[in-house]
Amino acid sequence: AMLGAAPAYADKIDDAAKKLSVESYDFLKKIDWNSDIYGKLPSSSPPVVLDAIKPVLAMGAAMDSAALKKGVMAHVKAIGSVDTKGVTTLEDYTAINAAIGHMVASVPAWKTLDVYGAFSTIFPKEGQDYLAGLYGPEAEKAYKAFLEFKDVVKSSQR
Image (tube, rainbow, N blue to C red; front, side, top):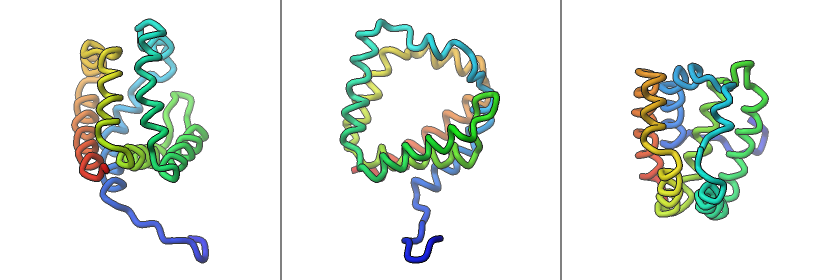
């Protein structure tokens, strides 16, 4: 640590992000991130996608600026460690998850629900079932870990 810098302490979101990351990393590594499918999702019309993006932008604008900056910088760092399969390191993946947890915790829960609702219409259950069918036990394990992470973040939300 730098002299005079505040010490970094892990909190319950950081702890949950670590658990999520460890338990979902096999799933993350199994996904074909170089597939062109990600350029085709969602398959909704551009106006529908734009409507879904509005609550995401509103949520971002309401986030704590320090948490948002930390999240952006975690993503910048992670991009630098992406391998040829499109996967970042576990360390960088963990930092992203922790940052996202703090970002989401810094906004009211209703903003998170607005985003969830907007995207539930353009990424339907069939898409979720497809991923679960394609990636099997790793997808189920990752989803279970995500739900636990979500509960920790929600308990910290303002």
